[in-house]
Image 1 (cartoon, helix red, strand yellow):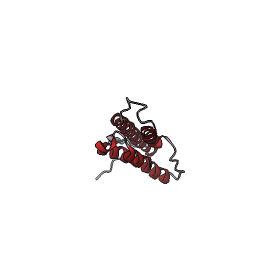
Image 2 (tube, one colour):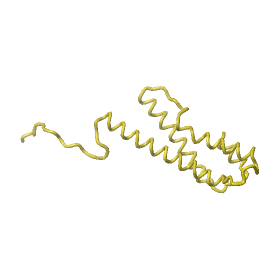
Image 3 (cartoon, rainbow, N blue to C red):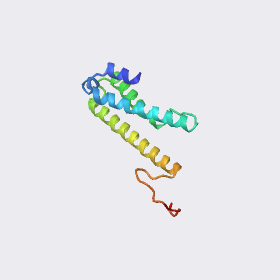
Image 4 (cartoon, rainbow, N blue to C red):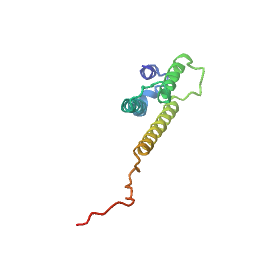
Length: 127
């Protein structure tokens, strides 16, 4: 709802001009929240959406309200730069989550990521 509000009420029209970046940002935020929901379900834990993964949505809401209420109060406010910053934060958070999930899964399963463990000892079958 906050993203839609920013999209429709953008004074500088930067959101409409950079629609792909805006949609990619929302997609990354949504993908991260869904992936954390899936992991919580697989681990039989309670899903906690109010964590760092939802933080970029608060930035979107803050900038939506700021662009609507404070028109002209911040002449140096650059919506394009704001969209880029939120995208970078979302991308880094998503990559960090993927890296952490892969590392934790490999540790729990005692496997190496993208490598094969060498056998230590064991009997060879004879013919």
